[in-house]
Image (cartoon, rainbow, N blue to C red; front, side, top):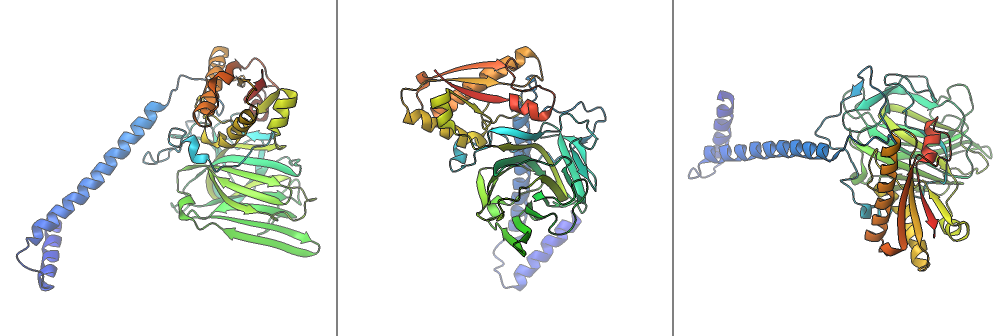
Length: 429
């Protein structure tokens, strides 16, 4: 209090020496202004606390179908993220927010890892590294996450077999680096030289597309080819829109759409890069995914091939199998990233007013039969609700059903196969 009183007296003296009228009670005004600032900070803290309680209340831990199920945390290795940062969940973002989102995920999943098969505290089985990393749980975001804080790399151990057109998606949380602030992070799609080892250098491998976020949150990319007709090909770019800068301890969904030489990158609902000749040699196929410096947690990594021809499949084959309808773990609310897929379904129904469909939900085999059946039915009903509410499709044209885990299209023995079983089907009636 003595220090505060001294500061107030000093400020008052400065006002007087500056010739400000002594008729004003300067000390009283300074005290009032200080109290107002304190009250605003207290109100903000209270609001943050209430928001955390409200978000926690919205979660229902009783549901058991583990799309991104956390591993048994025997070692109690949980990464704590400050509670003042609310998770960017489906309750906070409307489907309509994604109205300009044109990303369409590939039709067939060829790689998927949510680290659900890995024990917390271990390095994941499908990856390799020349640095370090471990599978962790977090206090705000469900599921298992691969966490790394280092200046090295983590890459897919087995080479990927990718065609001309494919999509890559993953969730990422930017976290603190060695110095305490956000460390930044990046990944590469690359054509490796050393199949069994590490490709070093600033432009590793034969070619690659490098995307990342700097320590202050700005996204960047670099596309390169180390031997294009004897000439080094190099393209670089940044996105300086501060509204899309990443922030520490927030979750982001990254989507990458590769169409021969063209690469498009999306962060949540925003297309942040569209590079027509990112991979100028279309005969040179990328075969490795690599995450690297400096600090991040990643999960739900999904690579899929084949652009879905929904109209042809529904009208000629009578069924669409969609992997582009997303739900949070154990939830039946359609995530906003589903907008582009739902928009395409709605367009088919709008253009063909006599067509009726049955929407059928499917799950993997994790969890009990009864809970999976119930969840699949609720998810199908939620898809119908969005088609009615957001796109104006007549509810009478749509029926819903759920099959739970009873109709798998793959064995439920790996994350990739489980991802194939989690789907929504649209069947022409």
